[in-house]
Length: 310
Image (spheres, rainbow, N blue to C red):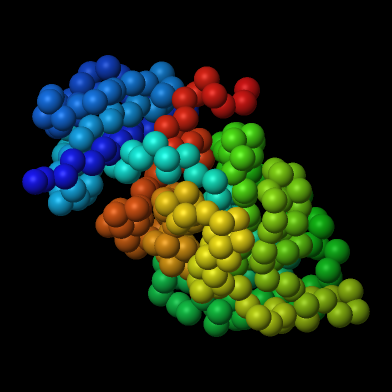
């Protein structure tokens, strides 16, 4: 006997950008047999739509997603297919990367401005996030180039931080629904502590820049938080909170986020590097958001716009 499972196909567009139309969603709906459709509804008019449908358990979500993407054509919208289990749809643990995910900047690149090395350091950052360089070695190399920089610059560069669109809504909504939120970054505590406090994260974890005599020494204190540390943070918090893994959510954009994305109940590659985006799209528990903002993580969990704080 074939087992049927429920899935949710979600379309999300960028708020304020090209919106989804009834014709768009009709084309997507037509990719699923009518007798398999359970429900279809707008989560946010023009911005987010979902269709719940039943499917054979041996039919992966990739085929459905590919058909929906083809139906949308060049429309700049994200298409994801996730399991729709009412007990696990809304997550109770979020582990989030910070740079280029919760905030718009890469902070080492911003610091590089003060030593005239932005192009060089940002190039190393880009290659590390694409997985072309060892993360720890690349971090040490970039920080080494900052040796001698006045530590007062850290406060100045923090003023450049801008939140990723939807970040505040994401954290406020999840917190109000009893979700534990952790900021886990390969960046630095001098920045994560500010963002964690500003948005209301329950905890933060990152690397520590060494300072001596009021200057950056060009070193990062051990141990260095990278790919495995992010995975361990997810596992530690899952155990600490007594949660089943399907109730966990992870989001990030770089190669050092892939391990935690794969281990989470829902792993979201957000505006990610091509290699990371492709890897996440192949995961049974994976999703990608390229066009939408961070509210897209809420729509993946079935939240409606009327449930989000103003």
